[in-house]
Image 1 (tube, rainbow, N blue to C red):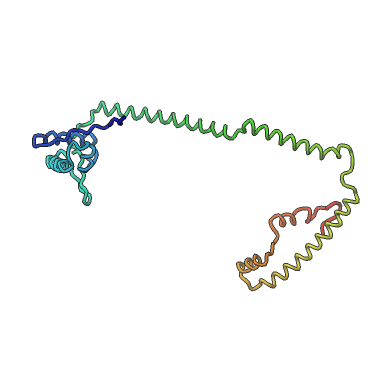
Image 2: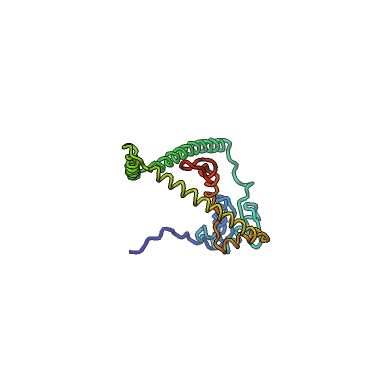
Length: 240
């Protein structure tokens, strides 16, 4: 079964007697579209009713008659309807168009407000957990509660979590290893200052990276400034 053609080609206008009809056809099309065209585009848009060569001649003739305005850009020539010959827009029709324009603007504002409100509601819905997510969160929280209650049970029963001897042992171990850390850090700082005294900062940083040296991080600095190491008592004794 053959496919039916949707576009029917217009009959080609030929002969001297058809020149006037061809001119009218081209002029009517240019006025109706009211935009610049070249001969090739006009002939193609008319589906070949006026051949390309004839279209070019007709456009030039119409321009000479003042029906069209001819503009040349480089090697390309365009033709557009002479705006002075077009019918003026009646005041009533112009007023009606302005009214329609204002009505459309108001409708657009209303639609924009509705869109904004709908977008806000959509964002809230997306941020709200689903039933499955809520179920998972409830299970996780229930597990955390059970774990916390288990940690509280010894305290509720009155049993001692850490004995006095254990606290004293922890205090001694903390004091011993902190003092050792302070001593070694001081030795390293003195040695590193001597080794990198003549180096620019970038070379010093590169050397430290090559040697795999890890300096104190921000967490270490915060710990040194904390009450644990500055002034507060640690398990009954002061940091040294």
